[in-house]
Image (cartoon, helix red, strand yellow):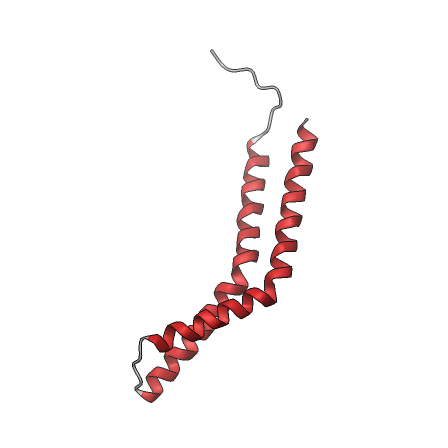
Length: 96
């Protein structure tokens, strides 16, 4: 027997919410990941040019750059998440 659905939510609304969730995730994680990528490429280029193959040289600058980028981008990241959650709660309220 099919279950009764109190509120019909169509598939396009679910796909739209999932798409917005993925875009929000990319906006939040993107700046920090790009910072780590740029610093990692720079350190790798420096190691290649100087023939200095120290393993810790790759990790320490990346960790420091990621922490600094977190401090810089944290207000943007928090505001992006707040906007996303407000949009989700507005849609939940509209259903009820």
